[in-house]
Length: 161
Image (tube, rainbow, N blue to C red; front, side, top):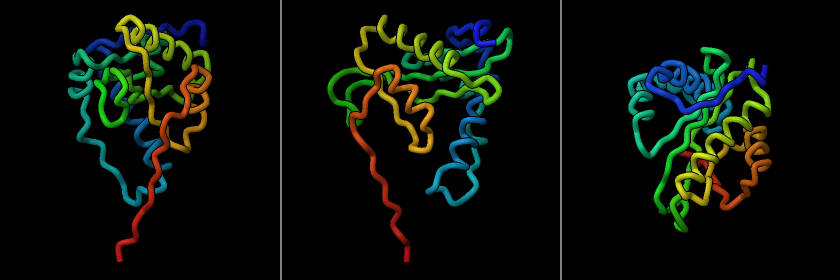
């Protein structure tokens, strides 16, 4: 199956399928978030928002297609130096998701390489990603591609007496 997967830049016509994958990603992460103690409503993120994201020149989404079905995507934003990374302009991987039935390193690699090739053509030298601690597979996949720990974000929940 992995051999028939084609990765290409997402278009407006793909926004519905990408939005549906984003919802799966969000629900998956929210149910594993140890700090989240209530049900999260994600209805405010609409397909129209993903249409706008796809049109945004500072964002690039690559989608993995199994024929006409999108089975995964990677969403990357081009960011200017700032508090998160002040050295140079960088690419920030905001989301990456592959349907559970389609998961595999080959699809993840195809998505990553499409994104990295785009980034190189933009003259960008750095790729940045935040990964939840529970997402060990994605963290390992990024390390496989050469991403290293740069900073560590520490969190403490404060009891409200």
